[in-house]
Image: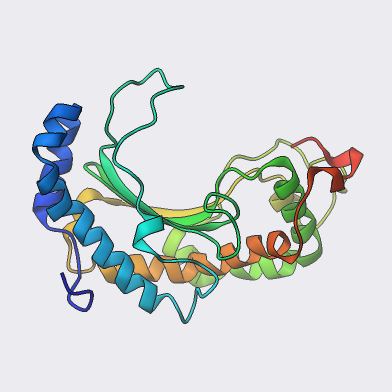
Length: 242
């Protein structure tokens, strides 16, 4: 599939995901793996390859590589009560250049039988990373506001979301001008579309539009993590609670 011609997934991709939902079984999947490769994995590879080109002007700090981006279809059920073996979606991550794959902030795309989610941010920072980001926000809160309160950001994804504390975290003044953002434990921004969006002629343009608005947020969040290694021992004793 040519990356220049890629616009959307085939309706057969959604049909396959719906069938996978009904038949979440390894043997069922093995017998139809070639269909998965044709209707889901190959188009996702083409999508990522095209994004790797089109993201360069606005997200050179993120990696777009099909080999690293696409999540495996098999679920890790070792520590889950849900023992169904297959993920009923296809998803890809675009992580920060210079950080481990699941550290820092990145972009994310998921195509499911029930929805499409496009966006990104920082999902599960550890204590040291979260403290570094909060200190970065405390000093640079005007820059953060300029990103997440811009008309383009609001139109594309609405508002910043994610888990939050009920009060300002320890070590920061309760009347800090960025108190509302310092309380975040996650920094997420995205938009959910109907599953049919994946087959629409506007799919690629829509994904690119959301990524353009969320990429500056990922760059901002990654700045303190890339500036210097973040070690738990560097945390202030008064700011260890997240």
